[in-house]
Length: 102
Image (cartoon, rainbow, N blue to C red):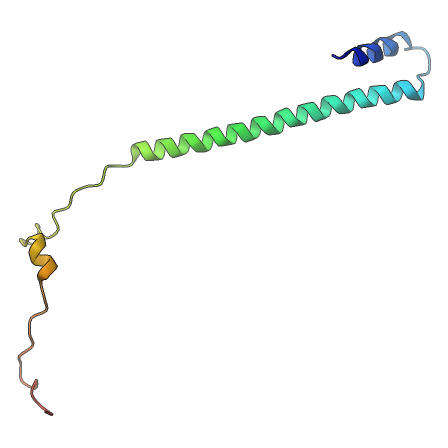
């Protein structure tokens, strides 16, 4: 508590039976407003920090659990090699009708 707030609390406690002055009411409301603003700032910043930490944890976990890239053997199942698969071409079509209309 600041000295101003302590003064306000002391005045409030001593004047419980008296009717408070508008100045005292203003000080009480100003102190309450400062507390509310302080609490809101802490709450919002705490939420933002918690959200950022959660996102970083999720990113770290997903990267850590991702399997390493697996080496594939391209056409090994079919019995052909990679070089063959890279150079293979469609077979020439030499059936009847290829020379018609020339």
